[in-house]
Length: 168
Image 1 (tube, rainbow, N blue to C red):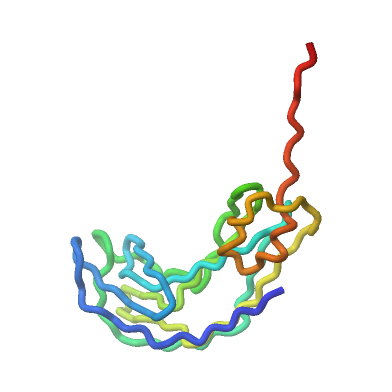
Image 2 (image 1 turned 60 degrees about the horizontal axis):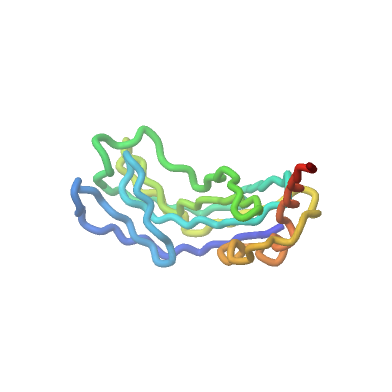
């Protein structure tokens, strides 16, 4: 179990720029996400090592949100019909024998139909990893570097398949 508490500094809206012209919202400590139909918005991705057959479960415990009126230019031909979610659970990938799950956080979202910028001032998530913790040691430890749980994930690698040798 993990609890992720976030206190997000007020976002800063930059004047439209780029080709094609689009708005950009900045927030310290976050990267940019360029998604068709949305302005450039701050994003953070958290990666977790998962045990073999394990699952990543996320629950929003609390969120304090503020709303501002803002007319922002989206990337692409037309604004999106809906806002991005506060969190997205990413598909599981396998890197160097380790299953990795992820969460994408959107602390700022834009509602183009209402011309409103939604800012999650505070966000608390409960994150749970379920599954049998048995596995093999991860062979390539570099894969652990960007994980929230590298010490746990180090023992959750997949057991290498036995190679077949022909007998002649």
